[in-house]
Image (cartoon, rainbow, N blue to C red; front, side, top):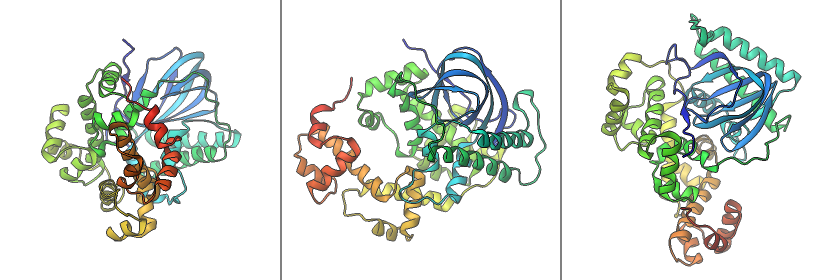
Length: 414
């Protein structure tokens, strides 16, 4: 049986769960076990050298490397050549993500900011960037104190705005390094286990009412093999893991938004308000209403009305993908502009309208190819394409093979 991974706390601070950011020093001088991170963080390596696994990729990290770890990323230090000494900033994902959503205007061709951090989790800083990152880490330390020595800092006015601005600067530096292909450490040859991506995928798609069936079709694995992997890695059943993730996300929304329980249920994948209340009480030993009263609303972030509409847009496209949808028709349905429609989709699913619509159609086509004997022409028409030629072109673009090759060569792994 493989080594079970550990879970890191969902809070970025043990001093105050309402904190949106914390700072500390850490050291790693030997190989570690796999660890799933429920809250994201930046690791700024000051000294040392080691082989560091992030999900499925292995990096050699050392002095002046900056690592971005996102929610439910799995990390593991495989080998330590020289003890790693680093500064670490943990932050609240929902707060920072919502802040970026409200200020970043991305074109339909752009990869979203947070997606870039996922694709390229490690960079090496040049001398100028090094000075900027040093300054940002120093300012955050001064603002929030040092976590490990239980240093509680009295926050000045506009604390949340100041911290979020510093985090935005740090993310900007990271993305600029990626965009310019500057000093990104080479991924080492040893491949990781692709199943490590399953947990992060579940977390990022909780609102889709995740099921083993959906995971099976996404990762081309049997339901039993996915369940076995999750149990071996986490010690939890699939449903127990879902509830753990949902409660974690629910806590963030309770602290930072005014969503009703019905709205929260839809966002994090519960059936209804009664379901979310039952699971929360069982996990936290407290009623959800009492929890919100006790901790109160820490701060208000984002535009709640627009956020709710984002989920409605996604649901509408997924429900009507086979219809003759256009960006203009969907925008008009929700009484917004096409630019606003694409911005909402880039934020929520990291794709513009046409890319997301094609993805929905091709995903459904994959199900038909694997589970039925339907003719490829009928599948093309059935998922919303006017011609087989258009269907084939989009299928090859997303799956890197023709539909017939997919049907003959891809199978559900046991």
